[in-house]
Image 1 (cartoon, rainbow, N blue to C red):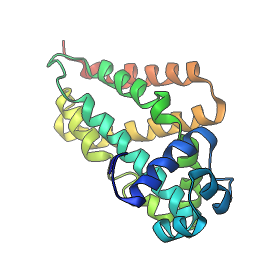
Image 2: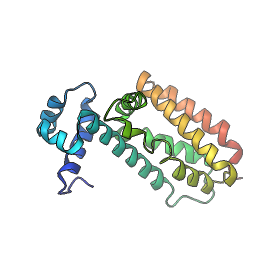
Image 3: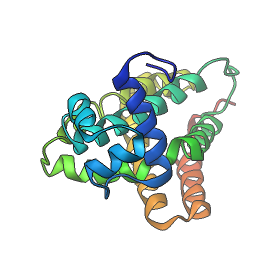
Image 4: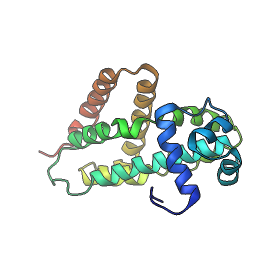
Length: 194
């Protein structure tokens, strides 16, 4: 659903995404979140079951949007674009402020979901598997041998998530960009088309 949708749940979700990106949300009570979102805690419970359910819905939607960015990157790419350049473009787009503002929430919820906290475990559905097909297709289109694409896709996801956690923890954008650039150059340089 989009911002102009008549669906009340979708409107609340969009408002929550924007609010949490700016102000956080994991540390707020359900009532204070409801007030900040211009609704009641009962409406949040009705649509999301709990505060954790709301936060999980936010994280899942942000993940979906990030996968859309990945799909958009594959449109109209030059046939001879080096895979290293593709990796750099994806990283810089993924770490754009508009997409990464909710990364802290993602990692907070990921830990809760792994621990089995009620209302958060739905985050684990597809948190890896939903990324592998588009990453695999992207790598195949960039010249990585077909039989190796799935393993490379999983490695790319792990490295990207690790460096995003580093960025959330340290705030050192320069260092994580350098680390990703090194990974892309050393890992994918051999696949670049000549």
